[in-house]
Length: 202
Ligand code: GAR
Image (cartoon, rainbow, N blue to C red; front, side, top):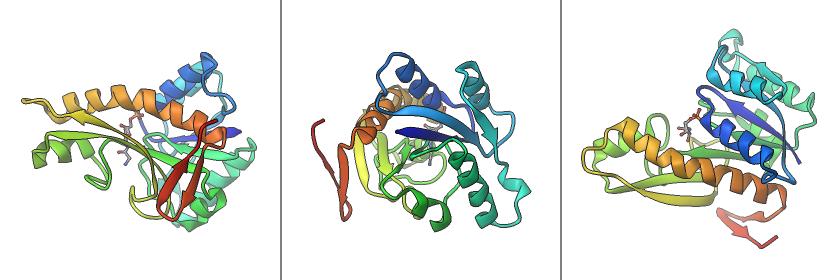
């Protein structure tokens, strides 16, 4: 399964995927290309270092969301991408994009969804005062961080945590979880029954 990874920033989740692939832990998934909606971000340098094809589709240069998403689709099609991973990709996608990858597009989010969707989830968790938050990997639909949940890991909030400290603790779990889910997605382990994701052994 050829996987396209969409990024917007630092790319530590992309790095976790690249490292898992290098260790032989991602197969039958293979990272085919990386696309960023922002130029010059560290995620692109990570892709380059790993020798992966990478491209920028800058959302600011498109008048309409549809045109932006069609260019994203074209980049992925050029690399025969079968499945998409949103790894810190900070744009909401419409049906133009999502319908091209039904049950083949996942996102990672640094909270226990449906709590704290959108941007700055660790800061939202600190501000709310929750004692437990975590990471969620879920199928993507056109809602904001709202698609069927595949996997979650709880992470405690420590007294005195600020958003950065909490996010770092969440990311340690996220960097282990996301490659596992990508491998299992490629192995055909997940199917959706309505909102519920059914998981079977390989
Ligand atoms: C990750 O923690 C990811 O869960 C989050 O952005 C971070 C990107 O880090 N995504 C969202 O908040 C999506 N709503 P990275 O660029 O280092 O992988």
